[in-house]
Image: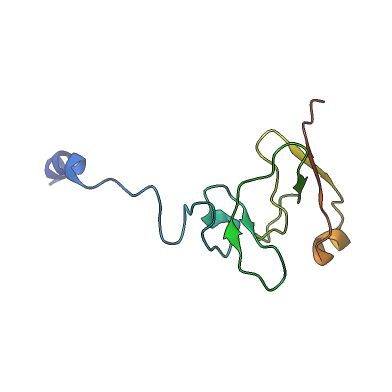
Amino acid sequence: LLLALLLLAPALPAPHDRGLIINLDTGELCMNSFQCKSRCCHRTGGLSLARCAPKAAESQECSPESLYGVYYKCPCESGLSCDADKSIVGSIINNNFGICKDPRD
């Protein structure tokens, strides 16, 4: 049985690059950042629908990474840090925006 499974494994279809719930592309509706390829589920206002968006580049506005999962400003790209207010109050009232900066500068 094990030998049969090993021989049939290459014949099984490969998983799709994109799913219905996770691995979503930029512009697709989302409910949490873990669903997006970019890892940023972005909404423009309190009543707007959230959509996957690219992470913020250097010198763009950003939000610090959070467990909440939906952002008004996306977190920074890899290697950059978000120079923002990281207080609890800023997180609660959602005004803890900053600017993406290279920490080596």
